[in-house]
Image (cartoon, rainbow, N blue to C red; front, side, top):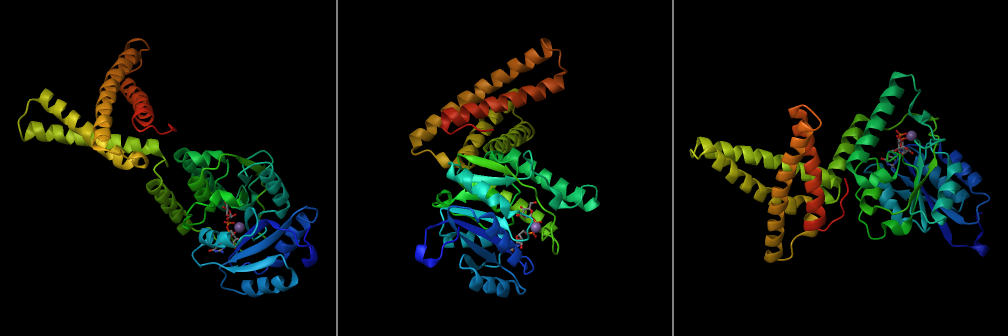
Length: 379
Ligand code: GDD
Ligand code: MN
């Protein structure tokens, strides 16, 4: 219920539709939002986060005069996420709703999103991939374009979910329709790369309670989607940023990369010791193993576990000694598993080798993460 000025209530909900050249959709979007919230017992505002180059601004300004809840906000012109991020501080409500302005996101879902927040969710997401949701808006299922858009969207979804643990809290990280408690982003610096603001918020805030409502993603009524190949590239850049900036993002992958690097160091040194220094193979191998473990330790503390650096020389040495101990244990366990796989289960030797390496990499990761760096283990 929108109140007049004499009875002003605090605004509880700030709805932020992003617009880039959407002049045909402004009025119908506002009307549909009003319709969906006409029985709500809270006040709301609609802040258009606009980067348009056509008459969309004039259209919104007109609406601003007609409806007190409508507000215009000029984005920095740096893409969809940047527009949302710069509009967030303008929001007066405790709850923020992000959505598209092109009517592909049905405003009728807004009350459902808000009621989940009222029931304690930190974030409530309109997902195409829960029961009752659908994806018609990505083009006709049996058209070449529709198949292509679905393939791209699904592979991005799964890739992101495999890589990044907070993303597993939603079935649809690619959706642009969701609501969250404003407090969630209070102390977080969000970065406006690309199109996928939800991925950014989930990764940087890792909210503890996330719920979903089914979204029937509607076909576009006017013009076409602004999703282009460059946005795909930008998305990978965004994932790259998150990977480098957040220590906990894909920590296990970081650990494996360090491990792979260790194998190269190990073999490289072995070659140098044997070929250049004519050291006996078994001794050369032993020394190169010991050195590569040291290199791994150094890289892991700088890269994989940089969110818990050693506070003193002493602590660092202590960690290093544990690191060597676990490396020794790992080698022993690898051999034991290898032996069992071949002899008890009759698995071919190469496959046995691969399986035992995978198993002990995980074991080593768990030990090192939990015991040496005392951080939560998530794979
Ligand atoms: N302010 C601003 N700045 N808005 C933008 C910009 C920009 O640079 N680019 C696009 N928008 C607005 C559009 O006007 C639209 O309201 C909304 O953002 C989404 O853009 P579309 O071009 O309609 O994208 P889409 O339909 O391909 O993408 C939708 O599907 C994705 C899921 O596959 C959007 O809903 C995405 O949010 C969603 O993630
Ligand atoms: Mn759209």
